[in-house]
Image 1 (cartoon, rainbow, N blue to C red):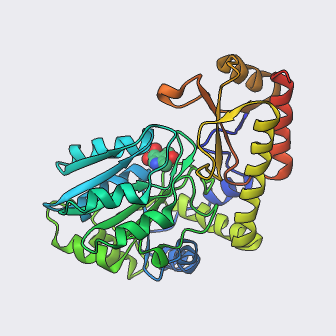
Image 2 (cartoon, protein in one colour; image 1 turned 180 degrees about the vertical axis):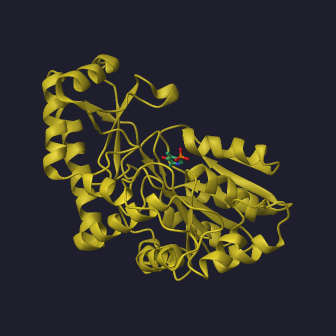
Length: 356
Ligand SMILES: *Cc1c(COP(=O)(O)O)cnc(C)c1O
């Protein structure tokens, strides 16, 4: 099978797959409670929170929709839009029947704290949605600056998607005052797709208690009630939780700071390569993702031909640009378990297929 260097799903290690394949246990059994309890403190550490961390058997979108249904009542939601995933969150808000306001910037640009502040000044916002690392464009917004702006409006909840940045750099939820921090399994965490993880602030849980129409499957209060007893509301993907336990062992053996440093180093290797080859970055300096690189195809190479050659001759799969950026960009992931060796292999293959 070719190796995935697309920004999700990313390559899953043999060790993770072995962990995934352990025998089933009852989800109300002592063994399950022990499993959840054993991973919980490490999850809180990664989230940078004292609050409970919840496990949702869904992809990230389940919790992205759930956060709207739990935190947005009769007020408005400000959806910060700068790429495919963040743009879609606006549509999802409307589909949930919420009064959604779009803060749209051009694809390739970050969301700035000041832009959010300007919108929130108008009043009446229950929540803001932000994607920390917009995977479609390779843009990473400054979450510290954004959190600072939203903190000036205590009635407004800050919902942050870290699907492709979680655990690749510090994102301290409590310190920043983030109200919902969520991530998925198949990108930065390099697990198979199908699990989402999230935590919610005390303020967010209080808000949820007042909001009608939360439904059942993503009701934050259900998650909290069950987590207090080391369980999930409904039968979870137990296999994912085994895999997550194994991944947490990996992360804490490597060391969280060392993991962050590795992602920064690998990302810098890819950046060096981009410059050496005379390509440009789709994202502006200072706002480039640390977990993937969105390369602007200013050299006008044949991206589909590159993808085909990489796959057939080298056994690597990269991404040829998301949606309207197809062919105009290509994306290289350095998420998950990548090392200097594996990134070197990828860059060597790219060198072989793209003339100097
Ligand atoms: C992939 C991705 C999602 C969607 O994840 P699903 O697992 O498909 O639900 C959301 N946000 C970001 C930033 C992503 O990269």
